[in-house]
Length: 85
Image (cartoon, rainbow, N blue to C red; front, side, top):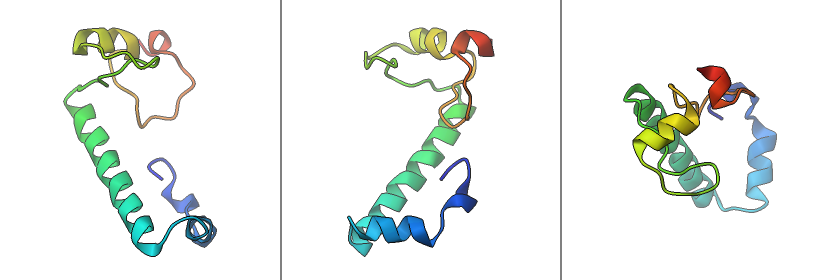
């Protein structure tokens, strides 16, 4: 959704309706939208994820070492943090 919203079409919502009510789909969409916004905003603050890829709670300094100079939660990339530096 964040990277290619034009790919979301009627078929996507038809599939969701097989599993969720309209109210649940709206709630899910709001949750996704808020999270995309939060991640975008936090990226401007250089706010790093609180958890390492293996699920450990980490400090901002350790997270910066893990994820590189720029958190890439919404970037589509195959690069590792070391390759982005």
